[in-house]
Length: 283
Image (cartoon, rainbow, N blue to C red; front, top):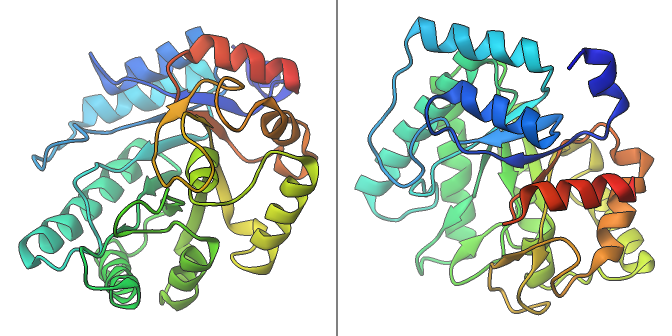
């Protein structure tokens, strides 16, 4: 696919498996009609690190050039908890974040999406401070890299932080190198965290809230997911586009919003190709 063809299409993709090699995610994405993709650069549920050979990074970059997929987004492993009160987990999380960023830099990946963390009963204020300290330390250990960390909005379940725009804004504002932080909006997470996204007015009000808190210029990734659970339930269960509690309206608005044209939109739902086709039809 040439770059002119890619540019003519919506910036739309899916979270793709890396089974068989990192470059396979790009090829699978291309086959699905993606113009952007999200992937893990290692196993998402293990602490064990993955150190890339030059041949692997070169192949990935070559296939990316061939497919024209841009940008490429990575999602950090699920074990990482930048708010953990457990010193062993906290240290492992810091080390893992550094390695995630260095792999992304090797591969030329633009954004690393991460869930902010869980305070595990120590309280919101304490947990947010812990995350800020963690990000400052990670930034120090990865000085000079181009990769930006994208803090993902969460469902706010249990002691999870990031379930409100204000919490994301608080973190970004207080990190020393705030220019290295952006955020990732997950539609399912925000809906179950209590943000009504069903009508056009809800949509306008929500994005006005983003402008007033974090700033829309910090929005660099959108996860387009419908929700199996009701608004405010704080239960994170993704559903295919238009088949959940949010409905098609929100996704039509996102795909037609010219202010979001340059923001990559990633689906994390079961029916990849059907959802991509539907979202393209909305655009």
